[in-house]
Image 1: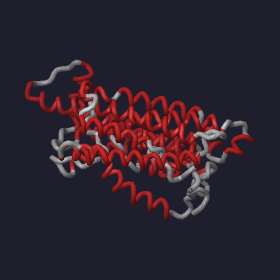
Image 2: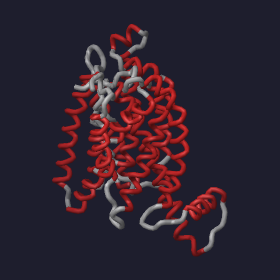
Image 3: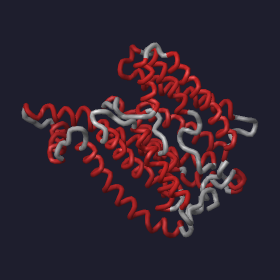
Length: 362
């Protein structure tokens, strides 16, 4: 198993250079994010001028008036695209931050939010709803609710199976998560096989590739609150994550309880991952690639990485979602396909970059 990136610097000289780049990087991304969101709302199968977008959003927020001929465009902007783009930003920020925490928790440079089998558990819950109509009384929230319950159930199983006399060890967490993920994937495949009709099976397979087509205003508050709380807590305990990535013995010598830190980090990342998967499906490669990309820019200290990662992840997913819903319009390309097509070559380039350290090795 690969080790986590060296917490003292993911690249040669990253400490000093990272500190110098941090303000510039944060300023650029902080300015780019609102522009990205605005363009994400304007672009789509029907392109709406940016000026009209600003006017429609302003009318919705302030109770302003629009003409009767503008109602269709206004509805598209306020009821469909704005919640979708905002949810894309939340999902991108959340997956990036959780990826940083998981890589520190299990000390593995190849870890991402889904390595613990949480997304596979969510897939079981969602597929049962789509294929057999469970939780139909919840209406449009049936799939999200079942996916969240599946993710939380998978987290409990992973925790109970990985916990030993010495607590949660990184290796046991990874191996248990991978093993249970295969089991959950087999259960999902069985649900698809037993689906009563082709349409149900096709819908399950599409959900498994991730997407934001079901985004509504109602699906935004819970994941947004979860991501905000996650970022705040991880920033507060960023030093503990730095120490945790060095190993349990080093953590003990520095006065950090590695087992307790790993336990609350596991709970936090599991809940947030469940909230995100419930509204977007399993969107891969974001939580794997973004932490490494950010470390190349600002260094490996977790306070710096956790400051930049949410902004970078939010911008990336907003643009990935724009691609998914425009390039093959009127059909929609699954979001997970877009992130994989971008994430794989980027990860290979990072891997081959001279000077970048994956677990201390080039």
